[in-house]
Amino acid sequence: MECTINWLPAGGMSFIAETGSGHVLAMDGAVDGGGRNLAPRPMETVLAGTGGCTAYDVVLILKRGRHDVRGCQVAIKAERAETDPKVFTAIQMHFVVTGRGLTPAAVERAVALSHEKYCSASIMLAHTAKISTSFELIEV
Image (tube, rainbow, N blue to C red; front, side, top):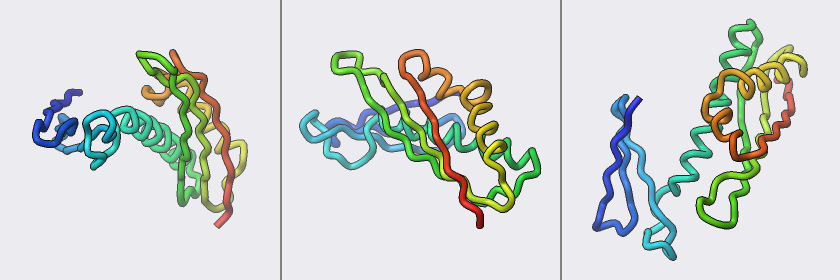
């Protein structure tokens, strides 16, 4: 896996990342840090990537288990250290999973497997942050 990040000097503290798969991601800083607030902060992209990683796992695990999953949303809230490096110290993830005939046990298992075995992003962040999860199940 690789990524190239280029600073855009005319943008203050704007950066463009080009991923190894050929996709582009914009990042920017807050106005008080020299940015123009035109894109997510770099640490917000870390948090979003973690949410995407774990949601991907949960959906895939449920689908592989032949469950009729129709939707998966993850709301993430994080706390950071007060001093540099301002690592994440606590992350709360709340999953809202929709489907037909899904059981709480199946969703709980999928979330647990993601955080214990498959989601490299959340497993990596767990070295500095206490990660907690919750979920709700909506029948459609």
